[in-house]
Image 1: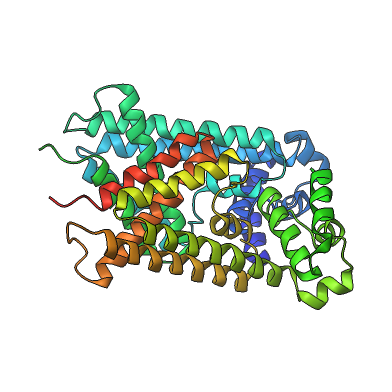
Image 2: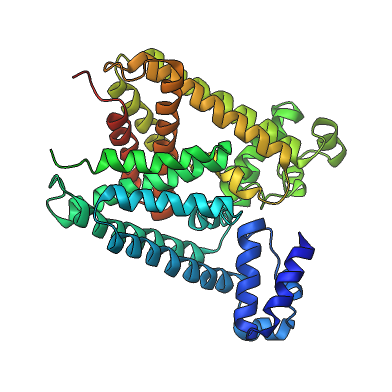
Length: 204
Length: 204
């Protein structure tokens, strides 16, 4: 694994050092976990100097927050793009499941980074935990926008109801991802689509 | 935290050493995480000797498997008892949510031990990961028994269909627990009941 990591790091040598550290750290956090990744390994694999690491990131927790921010921007952007390109909840949720399954086939899917980080930061890391909560709430907000766009049955009569349905859609996503992570059964990811259809039924 | 731990450990001094180590380890694994808990802390907090620890447990991974087995027996037993005592899916799932909320109020709920352990063992621990998968599949099996008992709409015409619905109920549980863990919003646990009702509708 370390040799793959080093090849990647070599490719990344042309990047600015900050970007390089972030790319290497993100990869390590996803593959081996935040808690199992030491700053020394990040410094070594990114070919940077210790002083340079601390110039750019004050601590491992700050680095974790930056990693989460980059993941979060992509994650929220993906849901928003899918929403804009879909004309029904079926198209939206099937697109979402398709993307997760593609990541899985490309060995580029390690579950939900929010949930993994949360489970790995039981001991301290209050700032990071608060960033995780912010991103989870942002996810529910963007899913509420989807609910408002796709609700043909008018069950979400106001923002509060849309947020409640969105929280349940988020639970369907987290749940299916965790059932996959626990059992190794990739077809569990299809349950996202199944559950979301139950939450946002087509117009009667 | 360590002083609470030590008080508990003192109370546990009358237990046989194996039980004492397991009680202390379980508590530490839940509160601060498997990966953040070192063998030395378990030995110290349980007032046992290093040699005695290794007499009873060959490794931290073996200890993790014992912890998971104890949790798993309780977890499967709880679902089975709830099933036996309930005459409808509503009674069953409301009982389940009530128990989770009570654990939360008693500050005795840290999310799903299977999912937390899984997220904390990204790096190695193949035996433990395989025990986690076994317990997840056992959970789906016992939930399939519930589905067969409570299905009034006859949507689960055979064991295969019951297992599929059970996998989705497990996803509802994992999802709601994770939404709580990510956002801190305890009412997310109610979504288990909501989603399960959508999966096992009352007879038409």
